[in-house]
Image 1 (tube, one colour):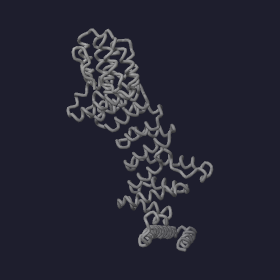
Image 2 (tube, rainbow, N blue to C red; image 1 turned 180 degrees about the vertical axis):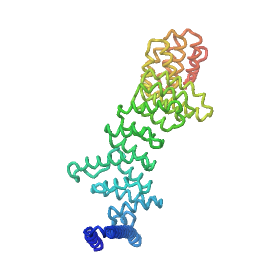
Image 3 (spheres, rainbow, N blue to C red; image 1 turned 90 degrees about the vertical axis):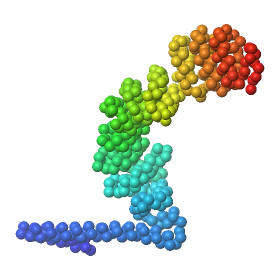
Image 4 (cartoon, rainbow, N blue to C red; image 1 turned 45 degrees about the vertical axis):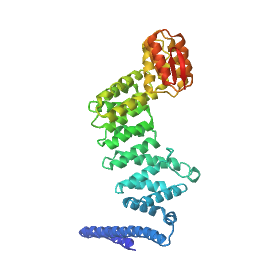
Length: 435
């Protein structure tokens, strides 16, 4: 009734003569103020009703999930936000479980959640939690069963979601945590060219938490069209890579995953320049996942340079990064063992030795076995020492057989020492102990 009366007053005022216009404006303003007050009281009543539901259920000693079942959908989100603010983890978990259950059959839940995420006045942690609920662990958008949705409804919902998330991501006045989470969500749920452009623009964001996650999201999208933007940003950062280490690391890994050969030189330069071991590790990892044969020597050279890290823990981490990158290319290294060029074969054996074991031992043993007959003493010795590190039962037979025909005393000493490592003792040319 109050709203109707106010409207009547507005209508009457609009018909007044010019001498009474100010009175009409005053009347309209008062009416609007009264309407705002009414809506505010209604909102307070809604909150009060939600908590009354919980209180009544609690007095009835109902379990928490049953308590939530009597609350409607809009009130459920209010309860969730309050639980997040008050850091009530049990309540947060219970509400999320109930929301997921309702979401399976009620498409409206998704739109309500999008509205809450889009509202910058809402609690930051609450919005981040809702963002995480948009995508299921399998990387699919959480929606009700398709049979419960009208034709095109699911596609329409996803388009609205992407549009809203893109707008939130580009709003630099919004929360860093929310924008960073949005970047990753976009990388998971949408692979379109427009999303790639939005994420690429975000690489220049002044907030490193946001820009670094945009770089990570571009890796998730996996579109090679993003490579030029990623490389351009990396080149802008390469002179001082340690100023924004998280952004540099994620850009390098994204370029590595996209196998962009144009990024090799810049990535290698950063690996040589950085004083942060995590940046070094990401650079080496990026080179490793490109799976380019020419990079194996580069990774090995970087491995030989880890002494520049003064702390033992940093050096160990750098060595582990190089070892991991080499293992990533194990197949190519084993193939190199068959190269007839002595220099390449020597390098390949050194690399296999540096791996301290390989997954495909049989193929590696076949290749190394051929080098037992090499005319190059250095290659032969390396092959013997590397074979002795393998666990295969055939190694003992191979080395004993090689010993029968070997004439070089230096190589014979290496054979005897290697056999001793695997449980065979040679005295006066005879096998004395085998265990």
